Length: 104
Image (tube, rainbow, N blue to C red; front, side, top):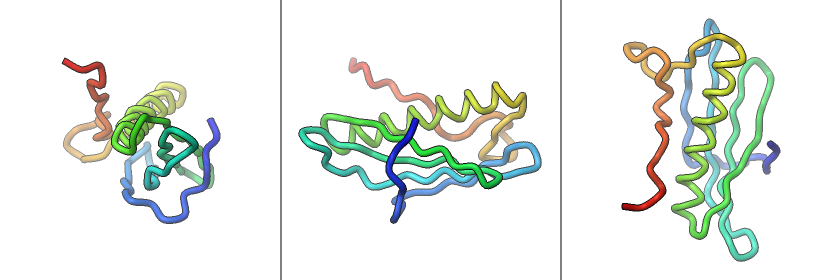
């Protein structure tokens, strides 16, 4: 998935990936036609994946970007066979838990 380059991130998280690090950056949600878009990037070892999520407002765009990041990180961990970890004492937990966006 491609997305716009993040110039001025509003948030960043460093994760452990084997002996390497992964940097996740989240951009400020912006108006995109009638909706909002929130861009993000996942970088490791000179590789960068750019993505984005769309929402009806800036909060939903940000929430969906967080969900998309978790999905991308899980796919990377599965394909590499390595855990991606945020805090040392919780192996495999990236801190980007799936949100309940379905209401009630």
